[in-house]
Length: 101
Image 1 (cartoon, rainbow, N blue to C red):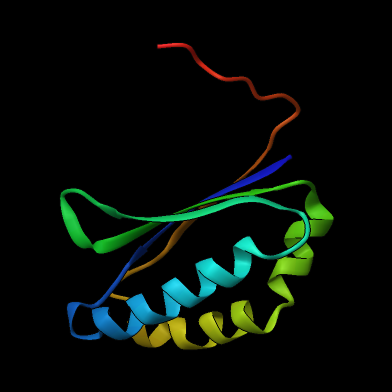
Image 2: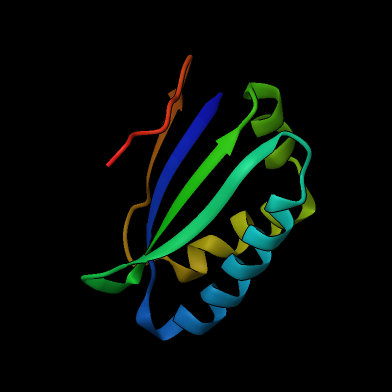
């Protein structure tokens, strides 16, 4: 499994437009083959910081995601929205389990 965590600082002047793009990206990404989960959250201490949590079956699924029209459209628009550098980390996960609380 491949996991991607990304944080995007969004310019407040472009937040609404960015949110529309992010919602479309997330909805369409969840429909892709090989996508286990695709979630976006707003940081509780910064409403202009969006955090992406993505899970893919494998590297091939992630590569296919990067070639979709909805990802390409988001990537092209992203420089307009950003208020700083994005932070993206990829994890190659061999095993995952549920944690009991």
